[in-house]
Image (cartoon, rainbow, N blue to C red; front, side):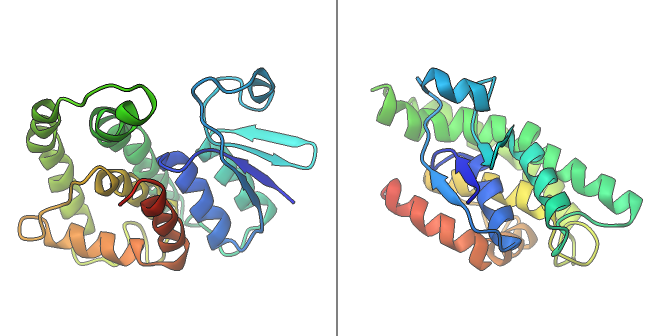
Length: 214
């Protein structure tokens, strides 16, 4: 059985879990914390990051790489649009999540608020975190509110990697105790509620709430 390595709380591990679940691929999830991971893990993930994936004698690292592989070995249901432009747009939103939202929601909010105290005995600077929430998140929310508009999904007319890549980041915001203002960004909130209520997302979110006492 394929094995996914990675810890609860990682938006990138969550991405892979959701993709595997959406595709109906059975897998074993081995909780792996990147901090001080054993040397053997570096053979699977040379950068020492999570997630990593093992399928028989094949190993891969990085959520985007893993999901691209899953798409090839099990094309249906597809997580990537077939139209060239929509395909590129889906990749863009995945990058917006990985490279835009993650450094803020993960690096500046979730990590100092949740990970630091739990694993490094550090005290969070709540005022500094709130400043990030107040100043750095709103422009990102404004952008997504406009992109969602009256659509059900971000790209095309079906659920895709675009939705996984964006919605996974907001779980970390929620686990850190913050939410999106429904009055200011109603379309974004409705969109996230739709995505997070999908069985693939809900199952992993429920487990993470237990793990982090949410």
